[in-house]
Amino acid sequence: MKSLKFLLVFLVISACNQKVTWDQIPNLNGYWEIEKVTFPDGSEKKYTVNTSIDYIELNDKQGFRKKVQPTLSGTYDTSDDAEAFTLLEKGDNIGMYYKNELSEWEEEITTIGQNSFSVTNKEQITYHYKRFEPINLE
Image (cartoon, rainbow, N blue to C red):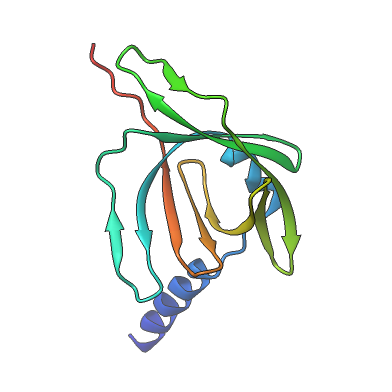
């Protein structure tokens, strides 16, 4: 019984410490909606309805992120505004580095999968995203 408990604890710890790898990065392409934000004190803010979502497009280690608004017809309203970023490896982590005329910032990619990803900024605020599923009215 002790061996089973040890194995379970080991598996949970191992899963929490998985490193994001370059072969997972293409999963970032597509439409994403924020699911929740986790603050440094452990508190969370959940988002049940999103009027805008993020569209991310990558080309090698360069990309952009743009806010879009889904419509009921299945299309997206958008502006020409987009935040360009560069993917860089820093130690064991891969980060998204943004720079524009007014500021620069970075977000560390902490988890990534086909249907979810999360990033943490320098204030230790973690943003959790899930793949956007369009509403089907048919």
